[in-house]
Length: 296
Image 1 (cartoon, rainbow, N blue to C red):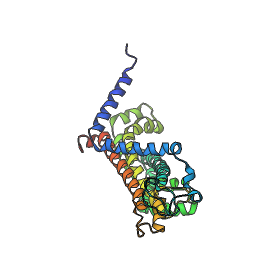
Image 2: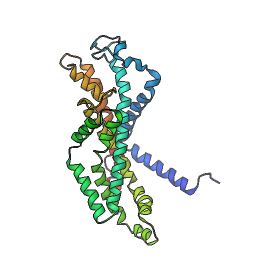
Image 3: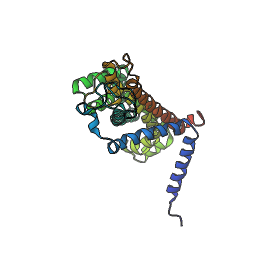
């Protein structure tokens, strides 16, 4: 007798079908490969490099030195290796991107499901709050929050997360309304299912694929937002890709010919954001039945 139950076999079949659909879109595996490389670099950096090289008092390289065998990506204004700063900066940029996107999706999913499930004034209040966050410039609001609360990593995560959830809430609300119009929701209520049961056992599993795809896209936006905030000086004390761009601007790297100082962090941001976007679009096409068969 097979050790797998019927549910287990169905799960394997769904996983195999998902991977087959995802692999059929070349953009998905390509983006996933870039993300895997970036995550591996971030995870292995503490094991392969010495963080003491980030200390400006211990820098031994030439000021704004060009790429060489000793420093493949050149040095910064203090003589620190740009390659070392890129690898350590990946940890900060990716962590802020993941955590702020996760916070944004938790808030947006909770508000969206609640606004779609409940009727009357609770839904009206939730949607007016959502509309208020939609019309406000999220970057300006995040910059104000970061200035008020300080420029630490937790503050940046909080600032990005609480200012970028509104579009997700509207998307999840629309999907919740579509799910709750189905007949089995009425049967669940007739059998005594309460609000919590309907939202967690019926609505949430049906909107989860959309949440997953949207989260991947939100990470890309969060990394761009973190880089922008760091460039504007809202983050301090941490080496990140956006902070490197800010330092290169402050020290006139572009005008002095130190192209490596500008190009390296800029290309890293572009590559990771592009990878998240490719994976997110592929996931959206696989998990959304209306888009299935498109974008191959």
